[in-house]
Length: 174
Image 1: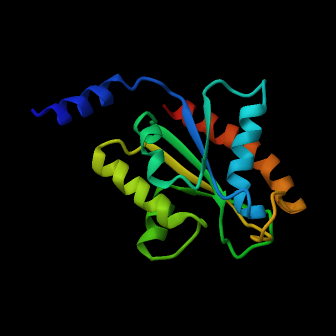
Image 2 (image 1 turned 90 degrees about the vertical axis):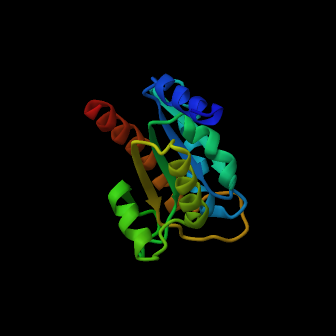
């Protein structure tokens, strides 16, 4: 076995944490596009939040997030998503729904192309998370501005609560 394969196997075996990476995606300079980042910032700022949530401000980092996926058995992505719904609507896409959607060449997340490539690379490297879902939030506006629209500010608070609920269900199933 070459050194690279040995390193991968050791990393895979040594992963024993049950933390759930909550990856917030988006550009906070484009109003509602940054909702995923706002959600993970809320989670990180909550001193009473669960210790098993590992909030990660992914912004628009793309492949630079691969190292964080290597250490994660469970990843919940939060991002603005085109749902064809009222602004602030939240929909959860589990692993199967994401795979079906990508197979149809549809587009959910505003950052889906980079996200799909990132997850594909993680899978090729042997580090794909066992549990994966996207919590998509319908934006109202994606124009210059650092604040979320009122509908998305409310949705971000609800999304933080949903993250904890999803995480608890994943932990219970482990």
